[in-house]
Length: 488
Ligand code: V47
Ligand code: SF4
Image (cartoon, rainbow, N blue to C red):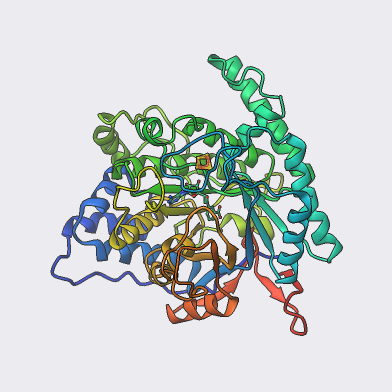
């Protein structure tokens, strides 16, 4: 099996000649061309410059260096097993309380039927998340995964199960009754928490869990956390769950929920925390770091961000590992190709993609906020591509970005638009905002596009559509039966 290896392309840097060209970006261009890590101060300039087009041009340069003209999609189904949740995040229009009319919890017959439908539609992935249900036993979750995998196997499919955000994993630690000591302060509490997370993730992996989605990260800032999603795990615990998943060989994704009550610098800190976590994951895989000491730019950014309470760069001498230098193999090429860095090093267990999620105000407690503008969406996605130099992929999740926006995002740093989705309960597009969807006139959780529509959207944006599986391997379809697939 090989991972997707884009055809090598000759990438020539372009320089925007628009009147609003910002010459301060020249120094950032030089770093981008050299594949050097951008500092938080650079990120700040990318957010504040009026020359957004150069920001986009730089992100497109990086995206093409990594992926050439390839743009990825998958055939998947989202399955929300329950919307009943013990928390009440202010940005969330999805949750219901136990006993509410709008609450639902799917039983195993429903889940089995969904797995069957997914296989019959040729899906390679089920993406399943839900609320923090107060009474379901831990066995429900292992049964759910085993049921999906069993039904798929019966039908001859190796359907991948990507399930449970880090927030759900910690909830499962509590209900699996392995979380003793999780809330204790100090090292003892932390190691007990880690042991509980490891136990739960191992049990889920044994049941057939294939990877973790990127949800629940929101934005890694305590002020925003306490104001908008109090009660949820904080950044240290979210990152811990993903670190332990990586140690167990599970790949994971990461999201950034922006455009609500956070500030732009919170987004940059979030990106910095994620790329530091990825440095660790890639180091485990045998990647060599390029810098052992914080360089000038990082020191500058410490000064700029220190007063905001972010000291993440202080005393951190971990190697900086970038994937954006010409010719650096992507982790999936190491995992599925013959590019092993160190023969005994693990070949899985890293962040695959960053998914910037624009805040949707409709129906939630923060409904009075306007949500981010289109340009803010492009800018944030482009900056994610530039800052997260050690993430292979940037996903423009078309369900939240809309398909027309996702098309342009493919030219602004994104290389992936997610999949056919079918039902999505977490946010709803109103009044046909997602052109190319089923064309329903009012807000609906039925948000499906067919493969042809996704491929056409990608081609129209000037890219070559490549169907991938969850782990970014190329999917080959049987010419006589397009529901049958294998990975290359
Ligand atoms: O964690 C909830 C977000 C996330 C709103 O890993 C909202 O491939 C905007 O994580 N406005 C869940 N966002 C979705 C998610 C995801 C989606 C697609 C692909 C992958 C992947 C992961 O949705 C939640 C939360 O951050 N969310 N409410 C809202 N009103
Ligand atoms: Fe519950 Fe997740 Fe919604 Fe928060 S975002 S209320 S944890 S379902």
